Image (cartoon, rainbow, N blue to C red; front, top):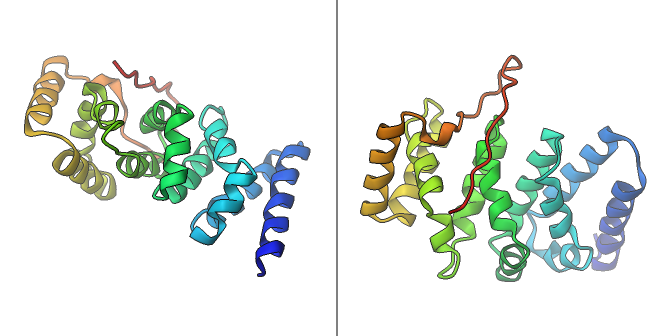
Length: 199
């Protein structure tokens, strides 16, 4: 697809998302945009079309599929320096952290991966705040292999030994690990999930 054709196609997708009242159509558009976010050739066009902001907006939606595709799109985009800077300067870090408490496995995995990609000298303190590290300690004990492995990498590569020890002690003390449930794809799981708060 030629560069101009690709931009026009992406622009048409964004327009369709804005114009349609169909939830199903919006979900399809978000899935397409998240897929296009895999390709670095599309980064500039996606920035021009404010798709990063669209993905960030999706993280506060009640529709869990919107959230899943929004965080998936951000995860695909945020290795790029310009995209990362935009996400961080737009207050995206808090929104991503809140996605850790999703009951959906893919949403939690994307949020966890995105946090690692968003780590910079300036953002590291927020990314490894006590609530997040406690969450990762709990995830590292998960029966879900993908979540357990990613959380273990996060604890080993992004946190100090002191941070991990304090988080483990706090988790044992409260027996709740912030009350964050592990992601569950069961249709019977419909409890409210608390949001993580940055201190």
